[in-house]
Every structure is written in structure tokens, then in C-alpha cells.
Image (tube, rainbow, N blue to C red):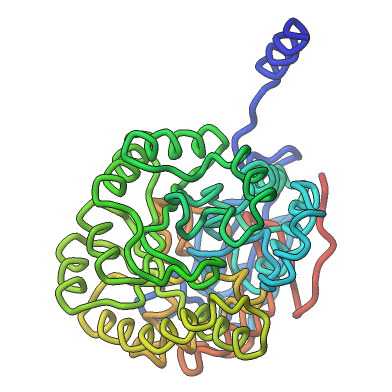
Length: 445
């Protein structure tokens, strides 16, 4: 048996590894005629322009409508508003947005079921205009397979930056034993490697997720709304545990996101060196000032508390979650408005999976309602999100050398940002997935 495993490992090592997005066919050239082009969100849009794409990357942008070279494909967006593909910094691709039903069906599902759910959700998010997503909590093996299948071109979906399982203290938000009867809790505990207690154990938990393919690390600094335990939303990890998580992840070159509601937990995570604060529900002015000083990103996920309250009032959440949902929704709007007014760096994120996949763009109107301009909200979902991901050289704008992640809407979202809820055209890495508002046949070669 051991010899067979060694032989299999040797065979796998001998298989060539292809770079993500490397074309497998002959060089492909595409010309895109754009009526209005927001190539760099934050700057004034260009008029009639031609984007030239070769093998999935942008090679040139020219003024006017340039006739394509012989053999090139022409994409006519002359009457459209064209902008970079959107980035959602907080999704859960393997979640369907119905936590009560998911808990009820947990005993009959495995990674295979999760993978199928993920393929459906990935396509919904892509067709909504989101060409890159950061998945902050999914079964490690299933999300890794989905990520790699998309990169190989076998599955239609956005580029996925995955965290695997969220790191949590025992009994905290992210501990899958919460709310289970004792026999089932014991069974879960035997397979759970994302919970930790004490700095050394938290270092082990981070390394375990990286070993399972995590490209980013997420930890629960505070309680959470949807965890089935009446533990509130207060700080749950100690300062030393947070520092151990952040330092270990950074030593492996991974950025770190903290799930955080209570201000005490948020402040401790910022002082530990976390890269993004996700939710940031109960922010004090002093913590907002600290975020500005440290350059910490806020991912507000404004859509999540609104969705959670709606679900709680409809009886779709366990009783323990209802008071938490109400408290978070009340506080979040004021906290986010003050953070925006103070100039904290904002990156777009929705917590989709709590809300429905494909509805991600509803976040834009909430951001504008909290004080952002439409341009600033769009920049938060493009250039700024790319910066928060440390991928400015690859995505976030339409510039030579970057991936051809391009979307279009029929009218300017700078006048009415909710127009981004109806994306008409989607291209990811040079492949058209949606045109004229309709799904395109996805090429498998």
C-alpha cells in the first residue's frame, strides 16, 4: 500500500504544471470596440476606444474604433459602458444562502455535493460581472478543486482566491461543533483541524489550511451572527492567538482577513497586523483612526446584515442567531458611514452565500447610501480590491499586461450605480461568458 502511494506521488510529480491561464490552443486575438471605457476607475472615462486582447491578456488600448487585423475576433460594445471585471472580496461559493436548510442537510452532504453547488454559484457570480472572488470559508478540498478547475478552463467561474476553513477558537464562530448533539459533535471534532486554543495551536491551524491549498487566511476574531451558539458578537480570540495567526500566515506569504464585529476584537486584529477587517460592525472612532494609521482595509459587507435580518424575521435562522442579526444590522450602517467619511480604505465585499449568489452587485447601492460616490464604490470593487489582494499587476483595471477581465453595461453606472446589477457582457481572461445579456457556450478546449 505504502509503495503504491509513493509511486502515485512520483507520477504526479512528473506531470507538468501549467501556469494559470496559459493558452493551450493557437494564439487568439480579439478586438473590443468600447463606446465609453472606464479603464482606470477613479479617472475620467475615455470615449470611443479599442481594446486589443491576445491570449487572454490586454496588449493595447487605442483611441477610436480600430479595424481588426485579419483573423481577429471583433466584439462590438460601441453602445455600451465598458469597465474592468468586478472583484468581490468576501464570498462563500459552496453556500446556498440558506443556513438553516444547510444545517439540516449537513449529514447527507460531502465534498462532492459541495463542489457541484460551488460550480453553480461560481457561474452565477461570474455572470453578474464578478471575474475575481475571495472565498472566505469553504471545505478546503472542494474549493481547491473548484479554483483549479476554473483556472484550467474546465469550469466557468471567476478567479478564486481561497481561504479554506476559517480559523476559530473552540466554541467560537467557525467551530462546526456548535449547536450539535454530543454524539455528532464528537464525530465532527475528530475531523476538525481549523479550531485552535493558544498561540502554538493557532499556528498549527494556519499551517494546516495552507497545506490544504489556502491562498489567504481568515480567522474569527469575534463571535458571528450565523454561528448556532448564543455567544454574542464579542471578542473571542486572545491577542496572542491573533498575533500567532497573522504572523504565521504572513511568513507563508498569505494575506489575512479577520471576521470581526465587536470593536475590541477589531482593534486587537488591527494591532496584530491583519490585512482586511471584514464586517467591522461596531467601530469606534479611535479604531477607525487606527485603521487609517495602519492602512488596514475595511470590507464592509453591507448586504450581509440586511440579508440576515430578513432571514431571521422570516424564521430561516436558529433562535440563537436572531438577536445577533438585529444588533449587527442596527450598528453596521453607522459604523460604515463613519469609516467612509474618515477616509478608511474600502474594498468591496458582500458575504455572498449569506445573500444569494448573483446578487452581489446590490452592495453598490448600499455603499453609495453610506456616503461613497458611484465612482468610489466601483473603484472599491476594481483597483482597490486588487490592491487589497496584492494583485494590482494582474487585475482591477483595463491596462496592457493585465488579464482581460472586462464587463459592460448598457448605461453609465456613474450616474446610477444600481445599473451594475444588470451586467450585459462578461469576459474573463479573454473568454466571453455573457453577451447581449445571455449566457455564452463555454469552450472546453
